[in-house]
Image (cartoon, helix red, strand yellow):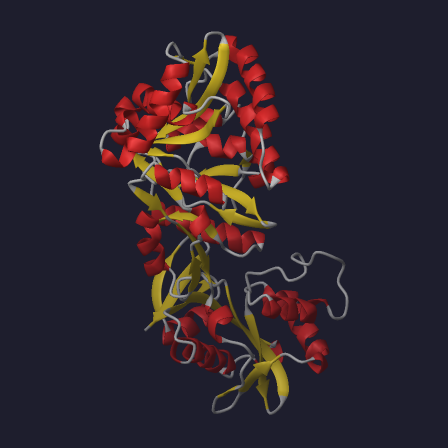
Length: 467
C-alpha cells in the first residue's frame, strides 16, 4: 500500500522531475493541472518502482493516473504496485487518464476491461511553428484579426510575468470579470478563480508566464508548462474588448516560449461549443485522445452465481446460513489456522458476532473480491476453498482449509484441484497461484502434487498452475 502525499507547492519540484520529461502530451500529466484543479481532483502522489503514481478523485471515486516513469522507472512494475494498492485499499481499479501511446500496453495486460474515451476530454495539440507564425491560407482569418488588433494597439508589448506584475494581474482579472459571460456560470467561475490563483505562481521556474500590455494595462495573460516536447497551456485569457487580441497573444506566447518545444497543448474544450469552434479554427495538428481503463477481474466478468462443483467424494457450493456454526468452528480453530496465513479475527472491522465471518463471505462475493466455496462430504460442511486476490490479468490465488476432524484423507487436495480446474477451464482464467509456509509439509506435498513450484522467500513456498 502506498504512502500518499497531497500535491502541494512544497513538494511540486518532485512532481516536476517526472513531468518535465513526460512524453504523454496530455494536460493531466503536468504539475499545473494538479495544482490548478486541486479543489476538484484532490490529487495525491507516491513513488514506486522509479515511477510517479498519482491518485485523484473523479465523480466520487479514486482513480489513478497512468504511471510516469523516471530515468530508470519500470512501468509494468509500477502498474503491479497500483493493482496491489487498489486491492489492499478495497477500491475498484480505474486508470484514468491513459494516453493513447500506452493504451495497447493495458489492452495486453488486462484480459477484461471496460475501456472508453470521451470526445470532450480530447486535448487540442498544435504545431508550435504554426501558432508562432500563422503562415498559410488556412490561417488567413487569424492574420486578419491580428492586423485589426495591431491597428488599434501598434505598440502592444509582450513580457514575461513575475512577482512584480501581481498588481497588474489583479487588475486584469477585475476587468476580465466585468466582460465575462458564460452559460455555465458556476463551472466557468470556478475555472476563473483557479486561474486567478494559478497566475500568482508566475515567476516560478516550473512555468512559463507571459502577458500582453497596452502601455501599463495588462490585456492578455497566459501560463504554460513544458513537458517533454510539448508546452501545456494551463491559462489563456484576454480582454474581449480588444478585437483580435486572442490570436495575437497566442502567436507571441508561442514564439516567445515555444522555441524548444514541438507542440502546444491548448487543453480540452470542456464541452463548450464556442470554445470548441475557436480551438478548431486554430487548426490543431491532431486531437489527443484520453482513455479510461477499468480492469475487471474474472468474477466480475464471468461468474454471476456461485456454482456447484462435484468430485468423486465431495460437493463444493455456496456457504449457507445453516453452515454458520461449522464455519465459525473452522475459522476460530487457532491451532489449525496457524498455517492459513490470514487473520480472520484481526481483519474484522468490528467486534466478533455469530454471523461475522459468514457476513464477510457475502460482502466479498457481492463486491466480487473473492469466492468462497463450502466443501461438503456427505452433506456435511468440512472446510472451505477460497479463490481470491485477483490480479486483473487473469490470475488469482487459491487456498483451502479442512476441519481437523476430516484432515488426512486427501479432501483438501481433491477440493483444491476441483476449484483450480473450474477456474482454469470453465472461467478460462490464465493461472492460479498458491503458497504455503515452509513448515507446512502437508500443504507443500499437496501443492507439489498438482502445481509447479515458482519460487520461495523467507516465509513461503510459492506454486503456480497455468494453461
